[in-house]
Image 1: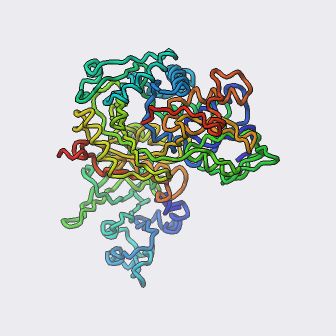
Image 2: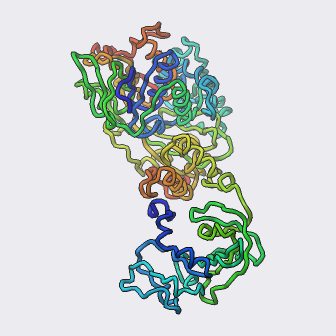
Image 3: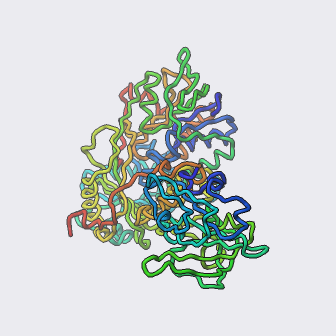
Length: 253
Length: 382
């Protein structure tokens, strides 16, 4: 499923989770890395002997939870932003999730931000406890977020600006002002391809010819039908590549 | 997919969808529409979106005249939740040669006899209607104010939704692979999703109608012909009517959305299924359009495409039962103007199939006319 949706399943998460006992003991890294790619900065980052050296650079990282003290160095070194530090010992009811963040603006300490799960869905509004810079060369910030204890293994992203009705406000096709909500509504009515959606609400018919909306609509279709984005039927790409005056074609210019 | 149906309609374009609706609204149950891709993916969705009554043959003119009345009330009739975008800005047909002008006179006489309010006007009067019209070499023009534009995607969508509410099933992304007969009577349609037994099959597959008829060993006198079109960026409304110049092989209109749709016919276009777009077309249409309507030279083209006309020898449709396969009806050969005549064509065919009184003689669209060599050629095709 992961390579179809981009969202790890509960089974995927299980394979990288520490035991309940280890979790309540204090800060520990969770390495949510599921793709065998040639990448090993985490093994170099770990000075605790928790992340084992790799025999093959394509291997998935292996973490010894008992050696991990939750220092967070690996978090800011992971290029895939796949490492989180969770601390379930923070208080009786609350836990801390440390999340890598590379967008501007960076949230302020004390600010309430929206916590998101792995699928990008809103889980609530949570307070920023601490903001850690990655340093001069490393622009990855670490956001310390205070979350309810039961969400410690769910909150994995943040968004600034408060809770939004994203689908109603998100413009998918900028040429024709088509919102995500309108696209989703057509998909739920049974319009199955980008072409069908294009013909009913003009998404992709404007001057940019679908450069923005084509892939966004493809993503929505892939989610609904549970298929890889690459399997979504593409509309025909048509000339001209950018708008050209009729007078130019007529040979006048 | 279901195994048995009363009616199988092959083709999910404007004709197939309209026929499905007209059958269902008359109480026919258990209708399935088979479409190879998605609805309006063929010629319907590629057409110039014009609706005109200015035809040269009585048959085309009647179908178009009565279809305009249907388009006028279509949003309400089909209880459509969106808008078919019917705009009656008229059609201005300009003439640059005496032979053409003489033909226009004959055509207008046919139209007047049928109550179509076409006017013959001077170049100056034409320029009052379209201020950016080039008068150079213009002899005169004909103008019918109730002609216009409708959005093919939405018209199909409206028929689809109305037919669905009446129980019609649409099987998209399904191809027809064969037709079974017993003793010259149709028994079932074979598709990529299984067979459907049916005693009534309607071949509304446009340029593929010949291929479908070949499945029962019948040679339909149709040939496919590529026609190309383009659309520009949208601009403020500045051109009410569709402008047609047969001399320049050009049609050009501004849609309610603001973009201009235009195309030219290529007299050297071969008879085949080629549906690629060409750069030669862009130059050709740009030269013709900026000659007839010079102002348009500043408009930017955003997209070009092409589609196939299902050409019949006299540019009139074929609405008839296939002699080799009783129960199989053809609704094809619309020769580039199927969209605008679809509403009443569907009614006519359905009246005939159900044994009801036809609102006009359907025999004029019969296959016999080709055998008898009794053809009245439509002169007003772009």
